[in-house]
Length: 475
Image 1: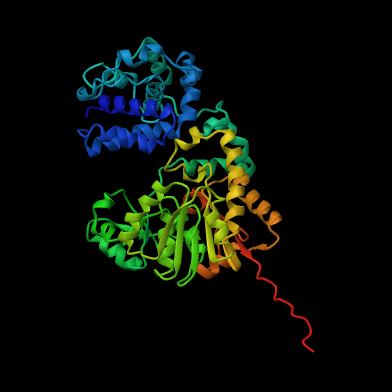
Image 2: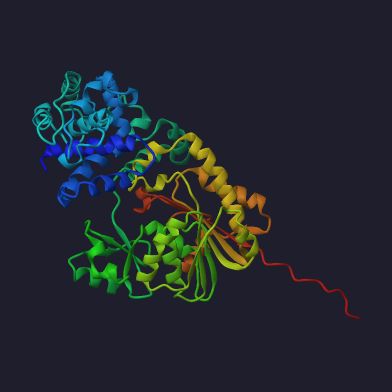
């Protein structure tokens, strides 16, 4: 593909993302699946354009509104750049309705100038309307190019939210958590994430996994916190390796590995992964249990649980029961009350801690989403707590950075649950990982800036043992 063809593809994908509904990686995967002639290297370049815009969208929009308000993507943009002037990427799919490309197109133009250092002449050479390439720049887009040429992405007049690549409504929430450290934390969160692997202790140890990967040309280094973690020095086609196919390693961020380790699932225990999803933490818990005991993976979406089946087989795991629930109040919960040693709740949340991987999430989230999630998290936690036996432990996990979804939920749960007590994460860390917790004593907070992981929060609670029954005097 020519540079212009890659830009046209990126603009199409960005426009589809703007239409909402699905995550960016799903939309990009579908786009490439329908256009199999696009090679691997071109896909990497197209994705780089897409994710560059998604990471920096707030700053790009600020610049466009400042120097060319008629092109402001938030106000609808320039109608002259819509599908009627655009060359369709694939002649085999010209029957498809054209995508509205103005917003994605304008943001790509701004990103090429402000991030990649293109000149107006570079743009004109790629936006020439030739086969598969974008339509020529409109007069308004030419003015935009001239105004942004030689500029840097940030500007002293830029509001704090835009300078930190945040939606305006989230700024106050994150300032309350990080204060003066906001810039450092958001800068790290705006970088691409590394590829972390968890070693499957059922099949090998960390050194064995490293050797297996090295034999296939993949260099991996131990992660700093997780004793089971490996981090690749560069991206690699992992799915085609023997180490992956044989279940020696699984893709899992180091922070997620630590959350599962802290749950302290042991061989022979009865354990529930209450919001299992596709099974990443389920796999980690099962490996800790050495395939002994009973592990129930629950979720409200049966299709997500089905996706875990292949991963469990590859990992050599056979002690997992997958159970679809109608909701957190499913009758199954009542029938199994107070019968599990460990219950893990990886709660649905805004996902701010995963923005390195899913930067589109910041633009999909709304204040209403946060309000609804806070209620849902509270209800899920209260219901899952019913499963914990006396002396058992409940672990609450989010990949959020917000106080409302983290400490506030832990405090509210304890206030409403007198039969539970806080189990300090410092104690859990010493018992499972060893040494001192790097992210707090009562709760665990991990961030990209401080720990190199995705953003994670972990709180643990222990159900108080039942008091001994009193039979009175036998005299």
